Length: 142
Image (cartoon, rainbow, N blue to C red; front, side, top):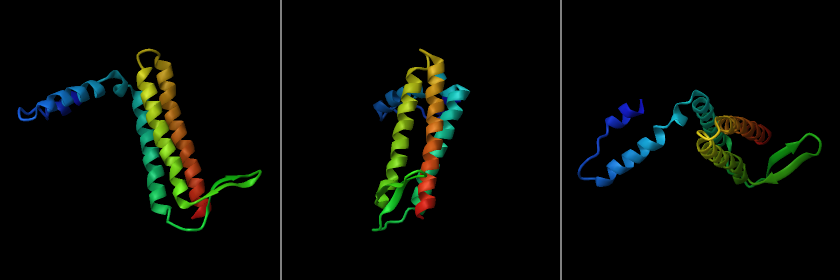
């Protein structure tokens, strides 16, 4: 599938680096890791969840001078209060952890496949938990 994609873009003679870049991209993406269904669907669903977190925040968060509730605990009530920009820390952290889990998952794929699956699954679970946190912060404040 990817060979057909890259075959559409042959290297041009006026850009000598395009062949090298194309070959590096082919080696990076033409890998058993990307075609494994467990990894593929875990990463795709995690990316969709992450995009949903960002979209939900961009559509609902409005700049305000009033402090907003960032974390609520049923035992102690409001734990963390901050400004509206602090809401974007959670999806930024989720994106960073998703990329880190993706790198670790690809690193361990040929060494220990089960560990690779655990990293990919953890990325998805982490994104879903972050989505719950962000949605609850949105519902409390907006």
